[in-house]
Amino acid sequence: MLLLQEASIRPSNSPTVRLRLFFITRLQTLLLCIFSDQARFLSLLFVVAILPCCTQLPDYAAPQIRPASKQPTTFFTYRQLQQNDFRAPSLQEGTKGMEEHFNARSSVQIRPKSSTKITVRNSSFKGVPLYFADIDNLSFEAVFIPENSWWNPKIPAGKKGYVLQHEQIHFALLEITAQRISKEKNQYRQGLPIMGNTAREAQQLAIVWIQDIINSYNKDILDKHTEFDQDTSLYYSPKMQQRWWNHVSKELNSGTTHLR
Image (cartoon, rainbow, N blue to C red; front, side, top):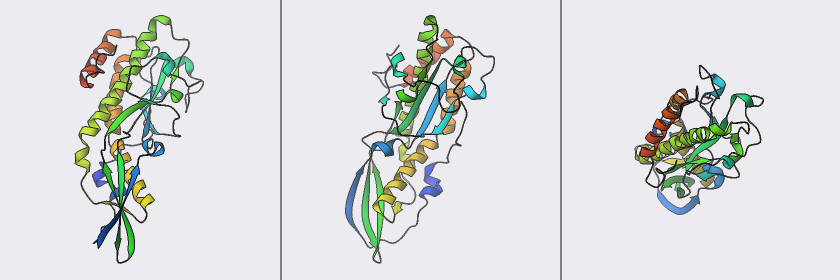
């Protein structure tokens, strides 16, 4: 996979949220902004691929993080993958015509859970309206996007299980990262308030702030997934891949560790 976007700094120091600070005369109206589908998917697309056989992981097959080009129409949270979950008709975004080099390609994403809500408070300073955004119940999850995930129909029957387990581990690794971000969220609730001149601006700045949190884990995500691909994508290695599966299974919540 290729890294198309550099990892961001931790959002508590990000210039996108280093906003003006005023002395406020009073607070007025509370506006509740529940996360829309569009807002949830302002996270990054994470694309994975594995190779039939290679001596060195080439750039075009290395782990890749890129901004979502469009909002997906279907998605699901972490669960056991099946072959029919891969519904893209062909490889996309720079890999078309290279089907013989790939067994599968998964598209997964980290997003805020639907329980995450942005509350906008209306205030004023010397008659000028100001809006402050508060983020409540912030937590994250990994989702799989079938319409952007591709399965090579020419995979030999004897290797389909290996390929499917490989993609499952990538999905699991991203879910583990989503859970980690949720646990570490408290360190981001410091610094200047999120403030805009309109309710919509304040809400959008809050979304950018959340996006920066996800971006700040880009390097960690790529390092872990690249390590996994180096161990299991260069050659057929069921024993090594099973070790990875055993490792991620222990880290997942109870109820998902039993997947095989």
